[in-house]
Image (cartoon, rainbow, N blue to C red):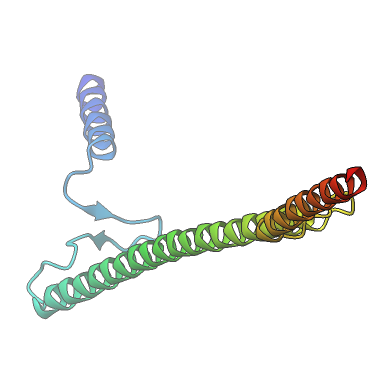
Length: 154
């Protein structure tokens, strides 16, 4: 009899340990004494409309995410285009300022070269005219001197 009791207790312990070690039936008492079966919503009382609602919500979330990503990408492109346009306009303004500065510098140099105090030639044409007049006056003066000499010798 002792052997029977020993075998029964041994078999009971193996079964108890096996049930605890391998709970494949979905039974979970959670320590409250009432069994909780996990059927994950796919039992006899399951309504398939919930799947469609979940699919629709998932689809709407994905669509909203795609739209947000497209908007972010469009804003990034717009900012990039605006930056390039601003750089182009800035370079153009800088070039115009540089050209104006160079023109002012050239004008100033030309004006200052004309207006030197030691240079009495206000204009090349006028200077050439004065040279011609001076040469003519010198010729006239020499001619008058010759006439005077010739008259004095006679």
